[in-house]
Length: 391
Figure 1 (tube, rainbow, N blue to C red):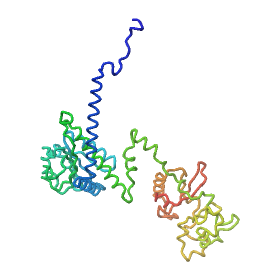
Figure 2 (tube, rainbow, N blue to C red):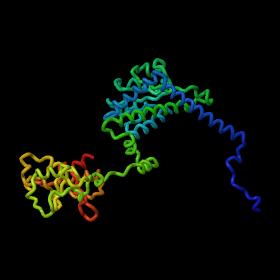
Figure 3 (cartoon, rainbow, N blue to C red):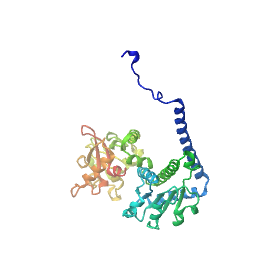
Figure 4 (tube, rainbow, N blue to C red):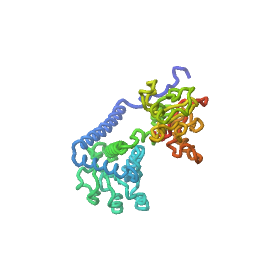
């Protein structure tokens, strides 16, 4: 076969007429624009419609109130609505809201046991009269908050709500029936709007739940729940490095104020001298270490701030060496590498304290003194255990 007669790879358009190509793209654009119009309509609905707005507010309140600690969200659906329900379970779970999927038929054959008194129910049915859901309805606990994602915008029009009047209505209507839009009643636009409103509910409730005082924040919760895949890799690469013990130091060990001249005697210094040197900036020559509370002695011992502050009036004139526990010798400190992550150091402190012998200088784990060590074993800083445990 000559080079000129050899076959060449077929291009994507070589077997498709230009008319067929245009028809395919026109069909795709029609579907996309129809679904986009449905999302625009449901967005406008939740911006203006009193029933939709009140329902969304009530739904968020129910989830935040019941799913914070002991309760969970039970999402129920069948058919394509069941597929949307499973997707929403994944979304709520990744955002730190415990959620499970319940098939209505399986529920009637024993799975009703998954539903507990603190749970919230989220039911998905476009028609509002799916037979399996109406059959299940009589067996659902009457006192549980129930949210319904459905095409209806008025509670009185929905069979499910008529049978369960306390149900919270979340409307997910579409402007044009799918049969009219596409020539077939395949769940397309209807499932898109249901999924979008469900996503809005998940993100809004999760933000509120994890922004409460003392909560870790939604971004932290999501990163913890999604360590794998490209999302997990991106979160890990953008996350700040874990704090280490060295980060907690205000002063290095060499910068801690020296309580006595190296030629002096520890016995001549009193509790009052320690209190004045540790917390009186006017008596500290180095401005960088003024008022830090930490003091060190020439032999490497330290006087921690909390122990200086705990001095009683009757100890102020007592030599520091005679005040029980005030001076912490090097061999009484817990040595940990300065580059140890704080979360790891917490475990080390608690573990070491579990083996503290009777008569030790400290009895409470918070009272331990940590010596931060470099690669050669030299002390580069000192911390009170309470500083580490409080992180």
